[in-house]
Each structure stands twice: as structure tokens, then as C-alpha cells.
Image 1 (cartoon, rainbow, N blue to C red):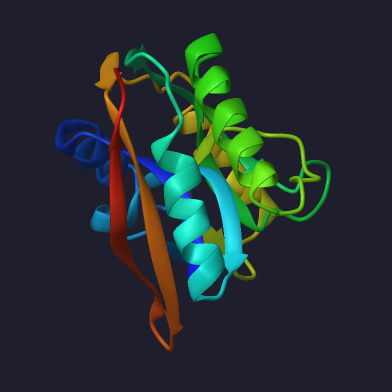
Image 2: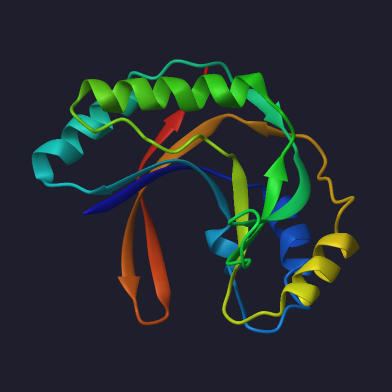
Length: 177
């Protein structure tokens, strides 16, 4: 089972992101129902580790908080753009949630995440998109912000890769205090 932990976005925020999903040749836009903020990619696990992950996430205790999206960018920095994303306004509560999730998962035997947490919503994966078009897109959407929205839960997802991309399935939902 291939797993990740994420925060889903309200319908109004997803709608705004979908309205930005055009104007880049060679872009594979993320489908509306799959727009999310990944807190931790876990990867492939067996049945025993799956249960340990579920239990560890159930022990995460954090208060609900507000969050807002802010700005656009691309990965990898200073190289040919491969992913276009929307950023998250600095948020200590989000970092606290992510760090508690990470600590719980490491305690049950997962290797610590090596990459620095860079909260973002992936909008598109790029294939031979001219960098000049990416630059124009970023300029056009540089002032993007979303209204603040409440985060009162996170979810454990499984992901199955297929010819038409990944299919995500909610395995467990965890409510914040």
C-alpha cells in the first residue's frame, strides 16, 4: 500500500485553483478532487506497518487552525520547471501539525523525511513547457491569495498509480482538537 498524509482544501479554494489551471502548454493539471496539501509522503508499507501508521496518526494532538494560500512558484528552483505550485502563507500551526505527524511516524519505524518541508499545493506537472511561458504564468498569478480557511482534520490516503495518473483513497480521517 502506497500512503501519504494530507490536508484537503475547501471546495471554494479548489474552485479558485481550478480557475488557474490553464495557459501552460504541456501541463498536466491536477484534477480538482486531488488538490491537497501533502504533509508527509510515506510510500509503500505492508499490513503491519499500515496499522502502526494509523495508530501513530491517531495520537497526534493539535488544535485546529486557519491557513491561507499565497503565491505561485515552480520546482526545481533554478532549473527547468517540472512542477507549478501554489504556496502557503507562513503558518506555525501548520508546521506544528506536520512536525507531530513526522515524530509519530518516525517512532513507529519510518525513516525520517530528509527533504525540508516546503508546504505547497501542486497545480501541474510540466512536460516540455517553455520556461518563458512558465515565467509569464507566474507573473500573471503572482498576487494570488486565498481567503483564510479552517483546518480541522487531516487524512491518511492510499494512492494507486495508473496510466491516467494516481487514484487516491481516504484510509482514515483524523480530527484536530
